[in-house]
Each structure stands twice: as C-alpha cells, then as structure tokens.
Image 1 (cartoon, rainbow, N blue to C red):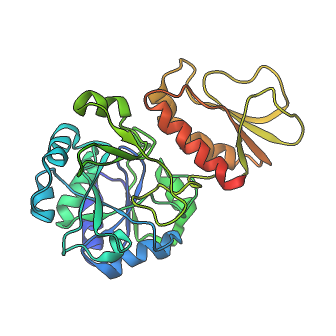
Image 2: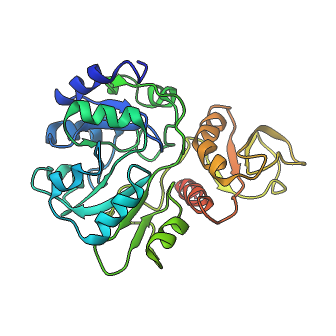
Image 3: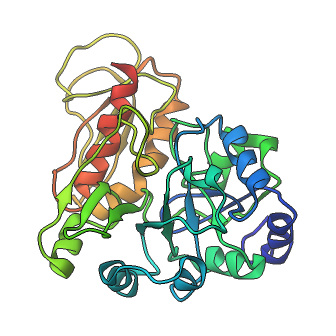
Length: 315
C-alpha cells in the first residue's frame, strides 16, 4: 500500500507482532517490534537469516535513544546529535528491554534514526522501536523499491509500504563510538570523510568470517543470484554476459545487458542506483555479471565494498 496512506494499518500490524516492509533513505527494511522476541524471530524466518547475524533497531527520534538504553557515552551522543536522522547506525549497550534474539546474543545493540518521514511516522505510530534489516532474502541484493521486496519475500511480509525508490540506495554506515577512538564496522551511505570531519581520525575494521559484531558485515553478502565478478569491459568475451559500468557503456565486447550507474560520474547517484541496476541485470537472463569498480573515495568506498562482498559469494 502507499506509504503515505498505510501508516496506521502498518503500525497496528507491528504492534500485533507482524512484519512490515517500509522505505528508509537507505534501502527498504523488514520491520518487527524490537521488544517482541517472537516478532523478531519472524524476521529471521522470513529472510532465512542466520541467527548469529544481529539486527538494527530503528527509532523515530534521537531523543528516544536515552529513553530506551539510558545514558550513552559522550561520543555516541555527539554523533547522534550530528547525524540523526540519517544513514548512521551506532553501537550501544543492549538494554534489558531488547530481547537477545535482536542482537544475536551480543551485549551490544545497533540502532539508528532513519531520514525518511514515512519510516519515522511508522515507528512513532507503532510506539515501539522497530528491528529492521534489509527486506530481502539473506545474502541477496538489498531492495531499493517496493517491487524488489515483493519479488524477494512475497507473502512472508504482512504489509509492504511503497514509498518509491530509496534516496541513498545503499545501507547505513555502522560505527562503534564507545571507546577512545571511533571504529567504522561497515561502510555505508554516510562517507568516512564526513565522520573524520566531525570527530577526527577513525579506524575502519570491515568484514567477518565468524560471529559478526555488527549487522551486514559478513565477508560474502549483498549478492545477485547471477554470478558476479569485478573486472573491466575488455576482459574475456563469450557467453551471455551483463556489465555494470560506472560512467559509460563498454566500447567493446558482446554484452547482453548493460547498466550505467552515473554518466556524469556522481558517486552519490551511483550508490543510489547500485542495487536497482543489479536487480535489473539479475533479471536479464545473463550467465555472468561483470562489475566495474567505481572511484574508491567518499561513498564510492561503500559501493566497492558491496561489489567485493557480492563477488566473494561467487569466488
């Protein structure tokens, strides 16, 4: 249903323990009442998500953070004040009200305030924090349109709120600011450069092969059903292949389908189109997707991070 007309009904579904897919500025989330262990368990079941991969809890307003978790370290509070609402997820200590299933047994919790009016209206109307990973099958491409959610999860979701294409098109940046030095655990829609400008030097520790310390940090993730590899357009020919280009279509080669992320080289636009373009290539009937990396700066670092993780699924 349209996001601007379905808030009250969707909020009632959340309060009753159901699942609601909703738009954020990053990607569509699959939401459940974060205070309800059985509702959270439905997220893992619907996504076929392993129980060791924690969820992000979403709040309607930055002021709700202390109401939920109590006092937070000064650096966490400062980042929340600076970047919320927005595509920044912060690591905090898990309060007793949040059941362990939401954090996969960790004593920490990932939390953010989305910069999307429909999302905040839904959370406020529900009156509870909303646990919401991306609304897709585990490990597959993240959804940036409501139709991606329907195609991927179908009847496993009780309500899908359609807010059109998401603005950022890539997941939030995850940061642990509880220690002496800020640590980026997942690259995302908030560039590292913005964090450095706000707080000074930061550490970046990405990827996980075992128990993740934050959501979406497994080394192989965000993958299409079609095998994907990183490469250039002039590499090996043959077969029915698709190409994901940064600025312009390949001049050579026999390509069955081509997607261009940003003809004018805008990395923000490229990030916004990334998953949508990969969804189209995935549906084009190609046998392989060759993806061209983008400049590894700003939000481009997050785009390349998603491409590397997608490729790692197949190699």
